[in-house]
Amino acid sequence: MDEEPYRDGPSRGGTEDSDTHNQLEVVLYPECSHRRKSSLVMADDPMTRPDLSHPDQTTACFVHSLIAGEWGDPKHKIKELEGVLRGSKGEDGEEDEEEAMGDGESDSHASTAEKAMVQSRHLTKKQLSDMAWNVRKLSKKLDSIKLRLTVKTVFLVTKAGDQSVIGSTREVARWLLSKERATLYNVYVEKRLETDPEFGAAQILEEEPSAKSRLKYWDHELAAERAHLFDFVVTLGGDGTVLFTSWLFQHVVPPVLSFSLGSLGFLTKFDFNDYQKTLTTAFRDGVSVNLRLRFECTIMRSKPLPEGSLGAGGKRDLVEELIGEECVDTLTHRPDKVLQILNDVVLDRGPNPTMSSIELFGDDEHFTTLLADGVCIATPTGSTAYNLAAGGSLSHPDNPVILVTAICAHTLSFRPIILPDTIVLRMGVPYDARTSSWASFDGRERIELHPGDYVTVSASRYPFANVLPRGRRGDDWVHSISKTLNWNSRQRPKSLEPVDEEKGGK
Image (tube, rainbow, N blue to C red; front, top):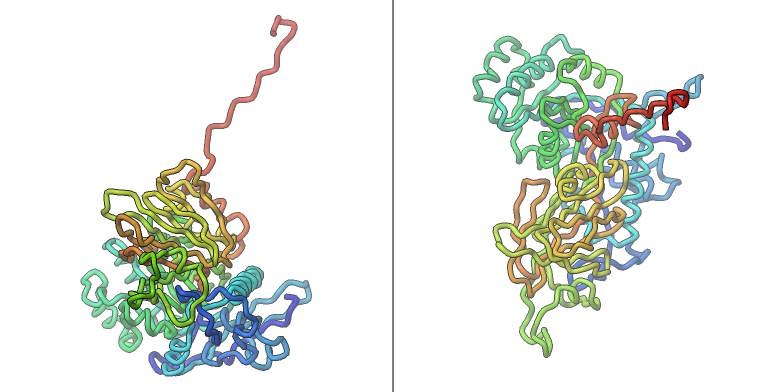
């Protein structure tokens, strides 16, 4: 690599809950008091840029420590970060394998960092642009190196609703818990498997008594609040299982290795029949990681205004509130919920019989008023999902873009549009809309938006760390769409037969 790489602290070891890790976390401290009426900061004020020349020491994530280093003063990168990746070039000029190590931190440090975190809707335009650019820059760095992680705790995710995968989960758990492994791993499986007869937790512990303290169970709350406990995630299922994993880890996302046991194969790159060889190689020799762009979505609820503040007209206008004049004293909206998504956010009419009316904004500009069944805002990863069904464009997952596709638009001229990931996109229900609209996130959460409410969509600071097979970067995505979607598949036309002039051919 051209720049001197970084390494994040000493190798981490230890046992279960006392050995806590902070990963995939970045903390921003913009001291900005300038808010528009909607509480979305759009000012490009250099004074509000966070000072990360002395990065927060609570993060041990190789991804976000690097990002923090890029934001800060270059003089402090090595001194303050203690590095995150350590690499050198061999005699043949090729990059040696990189190592990513993290040191343990207490839960109190993690909670403090979480409280100090600022949502992307509070970032200035320049801060959001810098953040997105640095994530992309780091992703390019990771393309050319192999990360050797110190794996102590493995998080297993099983395809929901498919009993046939339980046996495979049991097989992997038994193999990881065996004393024959070079490391005595802690293995977390879903809580529902504790009493599942097919999983047979009691039999596993009877066969391997040393696993009694190492076989543990996770639920949604543990995954959301203590994600720093897990060094590596293994999924058994299809692309839906990978999406579910992204949903579990709303902030911190450990590296995710996905075995194909489902019906689609855009995100599941590994054959389960070779799981022992795959996991042994990954833990011993390292992995190649691709950072998938995620979106941070914030539900913004309309707040009642004081009497007499509406003026002569007496009616509220969503466009005026979102891009009108700044007003420090009166905030028209409040944040309700923040969600990280990997595929798409869809705003639709829900159970209403009439079409939705949706105001679409980009940064401080009103794009258009959309009359349609809904609109799909997709990541490049989600371009092959609902976006594709709605007539949107396919996009390579490395593209830093936001895809906007209308669902059954009332006008024929509303074509799909692709926007840069540095834009803060907003979709709102106007105050004079006939009905409410409904927002869904990765097809899971379903939230009603009343007139005056809106959703912000921006690039997330928490990318999805997807483990890829080595040597399958360049053509892997094209191969996936060709295999799964039969992209541009057709019968090859026959060649023209040459004409024999002696036989009178014309």
